[in-house]
Image 1 (cartoon, one colour):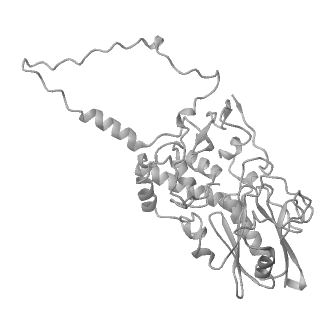
Image 2 (cartoon, helix red, strand yellow; image 1 turned 120 degrees about the horizontal axis):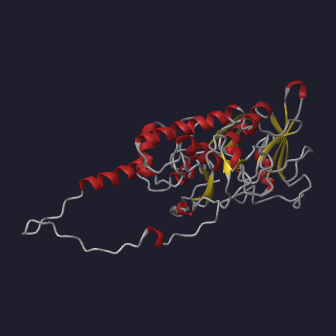
Image 3 (spheres, helix red, strand yellow; image 1 turned 180 degrees about the vertical axis):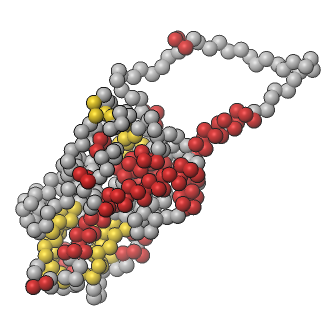
Length: 385
């Protein structure tokens, strides 16, 4: 098998949607270029040359707000702070009125005119201003020497959201999020308690923004599970305390390491799974890690999943329970003659005659762990992007 060479950046790789490190990098961008300035102009119609140019996109700028009311809510207000929880980012504005909440969805991104674009973008954002598929532009004044900053939110696939919130942290969607692993990491006891009462595949649980942590998306979940040595389809409640501790440590390590380099993929550790997972699918084979271990692909909770079978294992509790049951199985009661009755004999075909599912040559079977995500109660669905 040939090792897959990492590209210098995943900026053009489909499927690399913004997760906690990417959104934290955007928050930092807003802190540097928007905080302390006043919104002088608001342009809430698509611009940049896309097919919806000149139109107010009420799918992205959501919840039925009309363009005039949206513009009036922002105009003339000072940006006091740039905040983030999970994959949700918001600008705290001074004065009376709501604050501006941004969720990037699959392809949303913030940009500042004259500032180099991030390397982590999973779609092409041109250097012209405004970028193509821009949904919102803000012009902010009050900088040193009377300078003006121009901010744009672009979203080609339109899964992002721009919302107004009076109390962002106290209202949905932010109020429904679990702990943020960068801002306020949950204690190990919380991990143990949450995983212990769930039979969901552990990857699905990590992706659920309201369970144990928020901000974890598909690539982070796979990276974390690889580092912790845990199989993505292992039921959460079968993980031992040791495995859960390894998992928590891996979450904190991966998030902090990615944030430290502003989510610039070219600066991620070279042995990360991240560099070898893109541009492949569930039927891929022959992709190896730097140490020669085979990378397999499958599906967990409806999400494409990359893992290394040789080092990622199922829950240790399940294995221990199986051994324990075998060791404590009660012996059959002896008959009056003193001999244990023989169980009925069943003819077992020879190994060579047993049928096994056919597998394509050179591939690794991973369909056995394609586990659908359990449905949440109505109204309780959390974003898994």
